[in-house]
Amino acid sequence: MEELTASWTRPGSVADGDHVGIWLADFEEALRAGDGANLASLFADECHWRDLLAFTWNISPHEGTAAIVNCLLAVQPTIQAQNFRVATNRTPPREVKRAGVSVIEAIFEFETTLGRAHGVVRLLAAQPDKAWVLMTSLDELKGREEPINERRPGGSAYSRNFGGENWADRRAKEQAFDDREPSVLIIGAGQAGLSVAARLRRMGVDALVVDKLAKVGDVWRERYHSLALHNQVALNHMAYMPFPPSWPKYLPKDMLGNWMETYAWAMEINVWTGTTFVEGRYDEAVGHWNAQIRRADGSERVLHPRHVVFANGVVGAPKKAKAPGLEDFKGEILHTHGYTEGSRWRGKNALVLGAGTSGHDIAQDLCESGANVKLIQRGSITVASVDAAGINHGLYYNEGLPLEDCDLIAASGTYPLLVRGYKMNVKKMQEIDKDLLAGLEARGMKLDFGEDGTGHQMKLRRRFGGYYLNCGASDLIINGQIGLLQYEDFERFVADGALMKDGRVEKADLLVTATGYQNQQEVVREILGEEIAGKVGPIWGLDADGELANMFKPTAQKGLWFIGGGFAHARIYSHYMALQITAREAGLIA
Image (tube, rainbow, N blue to C red):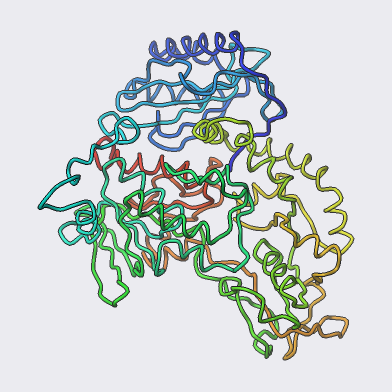
């Protein structure tokens, strides 16, 4: 997730709340009056604002007083933001240190013409009349409030309906879509697709999720046998339904798969499994997609949703390995995507080509299954222990705050602040991991900490790879149980293994290629065509404003959306995507 470093936290005081209350009142007065000079005076020389739909109906970062004030003044006449106040029943204002800066951090609430919202403000502790960071976040649309908690439905439509349809009857009819078209077609029933579908349902938008696998949750069940999450459970809850409090800190894949199946049932999500999205074309004249899908029985149907959401991850098909002599190798070749478990390779020789997360995990699984395994490193990587990585992963989620407050605070950082925070955190991580890193370098592992010292988090953001969080493979490399080879010392593959430049042959019965996946743009090109792929451009990676390219927000192709990333991305950003789609379905925005 996108977090800023925090060194310490002081409990909130009356003075903190007073400073925030005064600032919010002055902000609202200047905003209502359209007073640019007074607005500007409320911000520090260095200042940042990230808007999540509340003002701009988009995910919009701004840096510097002029950019912030100009945007606020431009949208306020339409938005009519008002009633700014310190949020009740939320984490109270408190003094913290973020990215090395002492601030008073507060959650506030307000409303606009169309919705209700919350935000985060960070006032400089040394100048509490000046805001360093502002984040504004749309919570709900007026008149489209979610029927949850005190607004939950009574269930009278199907409760004790003697002689009529019960809940199961209605759910079966609803899922069939025999008498209607879905407003939204979601591709992929993983955490992202299910989260978007659950939120859209609560907002009254009819959505259908399709997934090519046989059961909901198979996207996790069918991955390699030993897989578990590398960050802790507190970060990974799903929207509306947190994991049970007894569940382990690091969740194994099969627990996740089973939970997703339960989640889809409990959240009443319409899912067609065993269903492939074959192709789609957008009809500009009528404003909907012609989306061809193929069911498990071979039957086909063309659906006409107004929105298509790709929630199938941020990568496509496995990328085929390219290496000299690969065609001459007589052993078995598997991509990590097709690897399950290593027991049948006990006592045999294995090579793993690629030293990212999957390469490390599979090398560890092979080693602990009794295989003689060596990892072939193709380029330098970032390595961190799971504990050290928690400085970034779970920062706010370890502060004892409610999950909704953690999510709000975690989404407050603009790109320049993320870079600054990650640089600081990497230095701390290197100190924590100094023995681990020294041991790896002694074995010949080539390490880096990102092009600008921002470590694995910014590598994830920029290119979705190039790092490993140690779950034990690094220790096995250090003690020699997993061998380490460098690709630059490799000559070519031969029938019985890898011929090295010094003339020795590294014997292998199995070669696992940890060579990654095609990018999502290639998936779009294959299914939606060259024109749309070109119009949309890169998916994931950095956009010009530092946000993730084409993720969670409108794309250049009307009615086309993308969501991906980890569980926290799915939980947080499914909310904003669902709000944007709902606003369009309600005719509130174009």
